[in-house]
Image 1 (cartoon, rainbow, N blue to C red):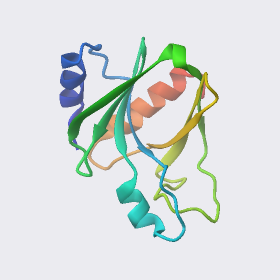
Image 2 (image 1 turned 45 degrees about the horizontal axis):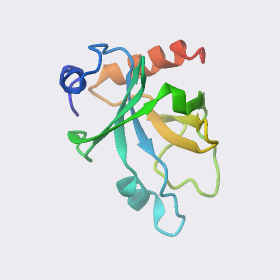
Image 3 (image 1 turned 45 degrees about the vertical axis):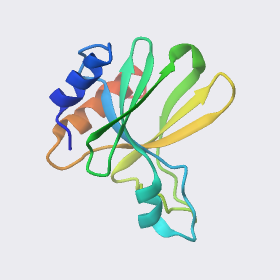
Length: 144
């Protein structure tokens, strides 16, 4: 796992803020086939450190070992209609590797109507900032 200091230095090198309080860890759920199972789907889904910046959401892709890959994307605030957190839903497609115990669903709705859902991690053993920053972001969005 990259340290929070490493993540902040990296995003500063990209020209973004030194704010360390609003960086979360999340995983896409674009691959959720029942046929391949949760382990394969978890391996195929992208993992990101997401920084909530004044100009938008900075997605910093990470490897399976949580190291920054250099693949970054900013979704400008002007392209986002809404952001919300929702409990992970139980279903037959419970195959992305996310569970109610370890993740909460982050739902991003674009101004174009497209919807992106990610599993925002609630905690990672040995990285207490993950839990605290998720709480900070949820508070900022009025979720808690």
